[in-house]
Image (cartoon, rainbow, N blue to C red; front, side, top):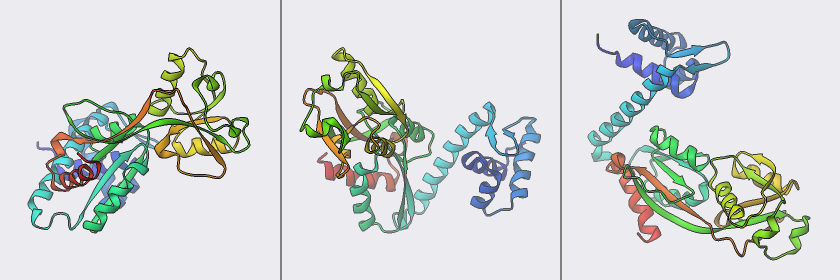
Length: 291
């Protein structure tokens, strides 16, 4: 018996939203109707796709594998829809960008919106590893990574390259300095991002190269959390110079002997790069970074 498209669509919506209720809202169906479609799919093949509790819905191992297939299925469906409606392409549609920091793509989004106001953007933040995972899972059209990448499955554009920058609260002892060297960070309390962050990986490499001690005062998730923790006096933060911005409560400290640089790279799946909306956004970015 052929797999029911309606059942797959219900499964996919529940898997993506993590909730039968939210899946029903997305599909404009009742919650019992969505539950019934998923139940029939499981019963038809004698499988369990979700572990259900009163508080949560979690994919089983088989459910995770099926989600990988439905993500590809609906990515192809979106490509087909775009092809068939090419006469009015770029009048409506959406692009999802998974980024480590929005600052690197906001100017491009602004320019694109000026030219194609009907296109809606969704920007999802996370570290480099998370952004790349979203791209390969077909949950994003583009990913912005904090490092260069060599992968034949990807089309990439280097957006910028910036040195690492330390920063402290305005009342920190180092706030009287104009710059520092790596030795000034030896065994000093650092506010570090989660593992998977390129900023963290690069400063760890630099300190290791110099034989210096890395002391984590606190580990936080996300760049904004680092800024808040440093402003609260919890330690020294590290960030790409391009992402520091300006703040009266924080003092920037260039690291004079730091060799590592943060290279921001935008990538998309090569198999998706011929879609008109993706191709057009790529062309705009390339024209602005001189590629």
